Structure formats: structure tokens, C-alpha cells
Length: 165
Length: 160
Image 1 (cartoon, each protein chain N blue to C red):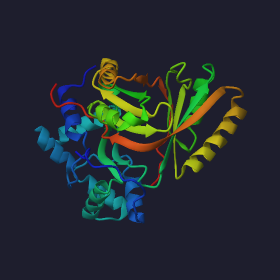
Image 2 (image 1 turned 90 degrees about the vertical axis):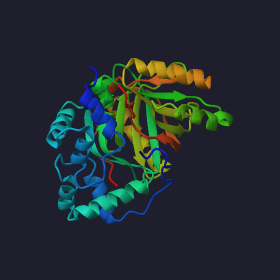
Image 3 (image 1 turned 135 degrees about the vertical axis):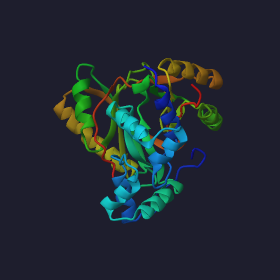
Image 4 (image 1 turned 45 degrees about the horizontal axis):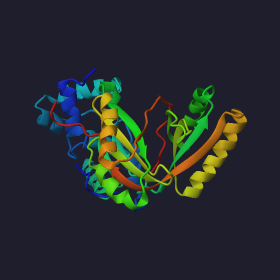
């Protein structure tokens, strides 16, 4: 299903951020040439359908003190991965958790979990603890693991779709 | 609109009001004609102060943006994590080549043999493979794609 024209225009108008004015939705509606109530109704529908995940602030983890951004990666037995993924995602330290394909032989890991912390050591300690609990709860399900720390943000603009259909 | 500003290198001094504002703005932004005034009421702040602080947090790169976050898969588009192994002496050059693609939404350097990790966002699912091929052609390096096969539920819990 392709985005209809209005939703596409809404995305283009707001993907860089909402205007910081008293009535941002009214301002965007004015740019789009539609009544504010129509915009609000459509935004509500996009939220309900999951086209918009949430509306809010995107923090820069570095600036708010979460200077260590660790991408933990796990090689989990295919039989156990659903249960392990649900369990891992529910842990307080984990902010994103996905199953992804392995790329053998270069990459044996099929479960990715982002862990943010105030130092690399703090993240490593959390992961040690998680690994011990994982082994006790799902014996032998985890064959290997690693953690990749980010050493630089090279780009962070988020989604950009083009203006023309 | 703010893509050219560089991210903050390290922690920025925030006061308690900044932290409360960041936490209050993680979700549930009001769909009304005076949403910032409503947020202010929850925090005991005037609308003007909410707007001024928010602008300052964006200018200082404490926040990278403020607005709707789209799940482009729901309208037929796609996101995909991708990684490359880039030789150290070519890293800067390849970064510029990769970042020049509008489809590259985020790009991080990570400490691993696969040392460049980026997210592709395209309007159509077949755009991902096409973009990966164009990046391979531009850089001469293989691009590994890691499409999301399943997302496990996590709660929003990162507190400022």
C-alpha cells in the first residue's frame, strides 16, 4: 500500500520536526492548505494505524549522559530465539530488540539488543549479568555473543522522503 | 532541517526542569491547538518557557529532533540496518560517500571488523536492495543487509 497523497505531504512537512510555535498543528495545516481539524484527524488515524510510532522528542543519548551505546549481538539457537527475544526485550536495560538474519561466515549473530549506559564498563557489566541469567533460563541457547560500541555518530537525520511523488 | 549541525560530543548540563521536559515529551504529545501549553500545565511551566527550553535543547543538540516518528513500513516503505567493513585509511572518504545517500538515515562507527553501521530508509521495499547496490558501486565495498525479521516489545524507558 502506498502512502496516499495527503499522508505523504504530512510526512514531508513534519519529518524534519514540528515548528516550535504555540499552534504547531495549525501551522502545518496552513502549509498543507487543509483545515487544522482535518490534519489532527489524519494524524490520529496515522497513530492508530502505526504509521506514526510516537510524537515527541528524540534525545541525543550522548548529550543526556548515556555516552555508551552498545549494540549487543547474540547467536541464539533458532528453536529458542522467539522466547529469548521476548525475554531480552523485556529487560530494563534494553531499548530495542530485533531478530535479524545471520550473514555467515562473517556474522553468526541473529539477535540484536541495544543497551545504553553511562560508560562502556557499565554496559559490559549489564551484559555479563544478562548473559548469566540467559544461560540459567535458556541453557545452551546462546552459542556466542559480542557487543559493538559506537565510537562516532557519522549521520543522524532520520527518515527523509522526497518531496515529489 | 538540522542535518548539518554536528551532534554534541558529550554530556551537556541540564537542569531538573530540562530533564522533566525531555521525559514529558517522549510521547503522547497533545493533538490540540495549544499542545505546548498543555505540556506546560503538566509540568507547571508557562507555554513560552516550554517553547524556549525546547528550542534551546534542540540548538544544543540535546535533542536531535522534535516531532512525529514515522514507521515507514506501514505505508509500504522499508527500513533496513546495513553494515560495511571499511579500511581505516579510507574511512573518512567512504563516510562521505555513504552519507551522501539521502536513504541513509543514521550512520554509526562501531568497533568491530564490520565498523560502519547505517540504517537505510526507502519508500518502497525494493528500494533497500537497490540502494545497497548503489552504495556498493560507489564505494567498491560489500554491504551486508540486516533486515528486521521480528521486533520484540520494549518499553520507552530511557530517562534523561
